[in-house]
Length: 401
Length: 181
Image (cartoon, rainbow over all chains, first blue to last red):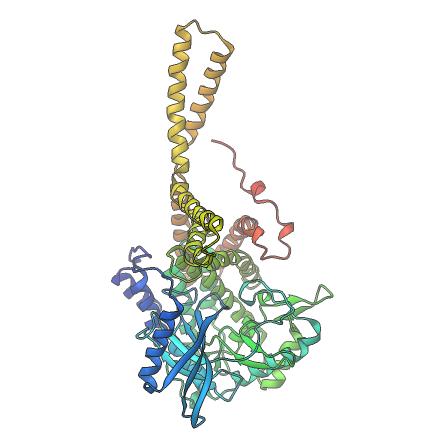
């Protein structure tokens, strides 16, 4: 069937319907992607003041717990390329602790359109479901449709800690973080421990809320393939034949999957906080990509070159700048009791490449060109990394073709 | 190539307007004035950049005509000077350049976008339906083309510092030379 001609900056209803038909994905992500396209032709992002965010957050909390609270010390919280964050102190009656208390919280809100267009409901429900299993901030309230705040948002507890060592360097959003040698083992062991805990979590018995449970491993994989090919198609301006070849190869080489896990989707250094000077992981953040999948999706993502660095010997690749690659995989197998399958690891490495290139090169350029985010200048700048990533993908495909 | 001047300029102008200028010290008049001028300059470049090539072509076309007009006047006035001879030579060179300046940059960009989209659609169809041997052949063609193009793309973004070995990449200006005509 010929594709429906469209202006991607003002998508037609027919084109949206065609994309939904061609690329069925998990229902909550389908809702999010349809919403994205329906709003695309509208206004870009306009600066939101701290007072507006505070008022919106108060309206959300009032709707959930009534009037017995007060927000103080609201201020901006920096970090990441995709969301706006405000930290504040809430004076309230916490039912969990049974009394009047002051709790430091974070309001995390997406802009008009994000480099990672995701579901706040998924993010919120992943944190709720995993509470007590791995280090997480408590999740308090969600505004999934932006009914109270200018855009969809969640409120969760503030976690103490840093995303990178105070005495370290990195490029934007944690890419290429240099971790000092003396703390690598401590952090590396916790990274493996938490990943193993996540991947052995009994998701089938859990209330996952907005996170849809696939009926089979094949459906779980199809959802991911369709999701990312759909986002590429929705957002890309200059198509890349290599990306089409990659997706074609992925669809022709579906691997077997021994079990499905709840995966994070962006499990890497930069997305957890740890305290100093004891280097204890205090919280895993950014659960917006959480879904049910093959654990090799997270594994392949975590060990990607772009998130790691070479050791001082100049040859040993350190996963996340922490642990030699083979050691990391062996420790993961020991901690999880689950084998690492090199065939699936390679498959997911290619799909993860497709995903990362889609985010920075297709979505990033689209949203920045339309003025949709609170930091278009960062999102536009990030698009440049798409070309080294494409070259990595080319090398990956040459190995498997 | 997606990392284009218009994308970066638009994003930089928005950052200036939304974030940087409101954060400037209101009492620092020099910073306030220069900040506003930076924003105005970015917006002016953003507006005029797509028209610059056409502007130059238009000017050259009229310059060639103007040169002919001035040359005729010089001829009627006796001609023969070194300056008049140099003008005839330059007018001829200008006309030759103008004859080669046929396509607008926006047309070049649109043609590239169109071709990549159509090639991508064929690759997708081959991957979905063709036998393994055909897939292997198109796979070799696509990866070989990607290697060539990505060398240029990576050289283009090398100043951003994403690749540790970017210094070893050829300078982009040595890769995108194209004979005139």
